[in-house]
Image 1 (cartoon, rainbow over the protein chains, first blue to last red):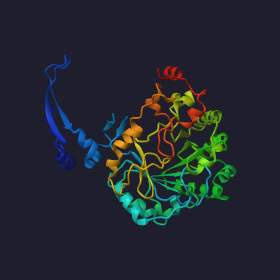
Image 2: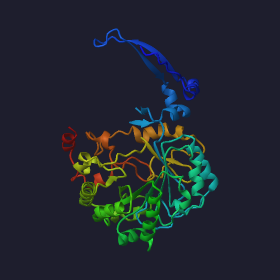
Image 3: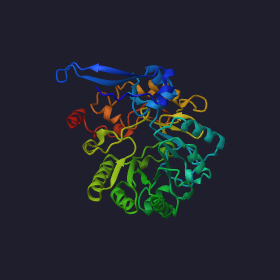
Length: 70
Length: 333
């Protein structure tokens, strides 16, 4: 597993008050090709309400995320 | 409808005042007083969203003495462009703008007939050459009418020869001042002729000519085959703000969904009233009902001057000539 550890930038830290979080996860692969191999994923969680309502969150993720209106 | 979190392309109309008198103009008037305080407040609000692209448009922006200051106010905006008729060259905006759109509408005779201003062709030619020398992208924002449909290839060649980057072709819509001149509307076959010339310009000249306003895919199969169409971005990634700060989802529409000086722009963008009146409209009973290309096409120009939802007027006019659902379906496969 990579030892490169991801860290939060100031922008991400400033969005924590809206429920935005970053989790560094250790994943054990279960697919047959790489069975048992460890890998690392970074999961960024954004509450839907923050995407819809919070200006700072919208600015930060405007190039990355779209939302459905229905 | 999937929408961007914030408008990716926002037009800010600084004024409706203009030094040309184009008969096809979609704006409501060629007159207007400028309220500097309001304009700066509008631009500061817009700037705070760090949008990908903000375009200053009029009326005519080059007649505004404070144009450089307006552009400076958008310092956090990632791409700044202006639309101008080129009658006044503005050296003082060099370095403040990433891209310039100039309204070139035909050869000198046709251009001046359409702008109703003798000498306007020489003015725009001179301005284009100077802006090109800045090293930024200079594009033509050309309105396609029945009076210039046969000049698209020659106009493309001319634009290329004087250093323009690409030509955006915007099919005339009889809105605003232009609503009195429905005769400007190109016929179905004139639009097809324009597409012939667009393809010829691409092939022979290697010049980029694309539609710059919404174009229904059912007008011509080559729109899909050659990736020429322009999907309407209204309410999806495009919006427009008038000189008073009123937020509309299209610059053809008078309907305001709120003033960004009273309600934050992001709240208006995500308002239920836009969802209900535009984004989630039921297509049942419209000519676009069941169209397999709708997601790609969005139905062409779908907003009336009063802001109500409509089927593209060209599709209504030429409903017997446009491609059928089955023809579109086979094109998509």
